[in-house]
Length: 113
Length: 112
Image (cartoon, rainbow over all chains, first blue to last red; front, side):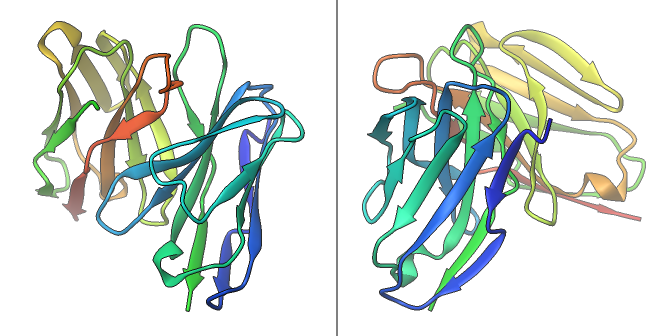
């Protein structure tokens, strides 16, 4: 099992450009999450999904959109990137039943200039 | 929402020393995770520990849910233990859907 993978690993954008980050998991997990991590801080939740076709806002959703068309994939989109979105983005997933344990991907380092 | 506090914020050790990291949380939880973020930025699951004690090699963790704290013990530290250690607790159901709330982390530096 590859676990949770993220594409790309690094990206540099100019202000106003758009991009999509891809998260894939092969553990058949129902829940998926997008977090961002800023310097000196823990992770904060952007959006999450409790199943295919459903998404919901987290703590810091502004400027991002998400889609979960397939159970194994969770996409995070930036329509018009801003320097404040420079961050490291982590995707995570977990099973629906009984366990809250989350498994994290390797992260995507995004710089917006 | 739930608050998570970690101490100490920074810790510097010589290789071979032991250490204890603490995580306090403001509300009852049904789970807690410890992570190690290595210098390359990867988040590594260390423990999933709702209560009791678990051990994995030189690392062990204890969660006392009734007193709202967890401890991470690192024995015989090595330079590869350097990085940031996070604890995180989930919200339970409702609108939280198990999202993790992270502490600010403990930055551990182990010198050879």
